Amino acid sequence: MEVISITSNSRNLAFLSWPEASEAASKEGSTLVWPFGACEQHGPHLPLITDTLFAESILKEVFDCLPNDLPIWSLPSQSIGFSPEHLSFPGTLSLSGDLMLKMISEVGKQLSEMGFQRLVFFNAHGGQIGLLQAIARELRVQCPSMAVLPCFLWSGIDSLKDLIPHKEVEQGLHAALAETSLMLSLNSDLVGEARPFDGDMDVFDKKRILPPEGWSLEGAAPCAWLTQDLSKTGVVGDSRGSTPELGNQLRKKLVEHWIKLFLNLLDSNWPPIDHQK
Image 1 (cartoon, rainbow, N blue to C red):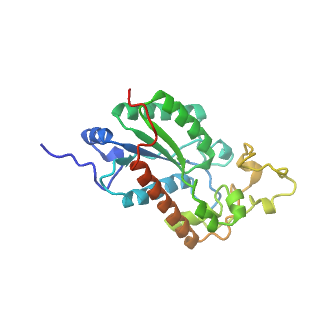
Image 2: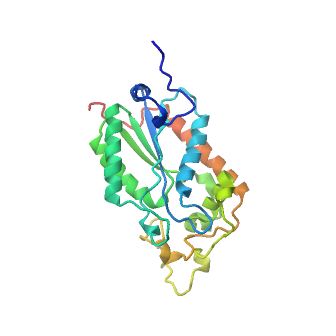
Image 3: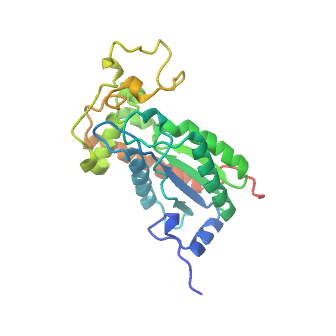
């Protein structure tokens, strides 16, 4: 009988045959990673697909560094997400929260029925962090035999603060210094000439209302902002100073961080799950 190989360079579930997918699911600790991005405006200088490209590119580099025998695969990317804050800018496409919940729940249930033990949301769009966390909790209740881990590409990497000014860490929320630099590193041909900064709070239009002390766009006391409230170009933060060199450093930090996290996860029994279906 021919031996089925599930350790090819392509770790995408969609490239496996059904017997290979069945064997993959049956592996101890079988883990699927689902990249989430968006189709939304990223200023006049970055493509609509920016977040999806980030999730796919970083995950590919991470997977290329993982041992072939680890039971981990990716799903095809979800490239249209929850982006209502950007709908005033042409090109942006957004699914409703209800539709995202239904779609992810249906896919998740099928993956659980196949026997996969972990599902990681590998999300690169900040505007859907909270939604994916809520959906993950719902899916966990529906599928007690499958752990669900809603992760954000940029979260938990303290060393990024050594590369990006504090102001940009706090205020550079969209298409600003970090994202522009990372895209310059990954694919500079997709980056336009403009470097907008009208969404920088320090140069904010004085006719607009600034947040009172203790309040901010995001953080401990956030607000549900819409991009047009903050910027005419769609950039929230300051994209000036973006360089391929900074992008290379950010890229290296991201890849190293996620290699470590996936190795730690696959070497553990975390999270605890109910194995009785």
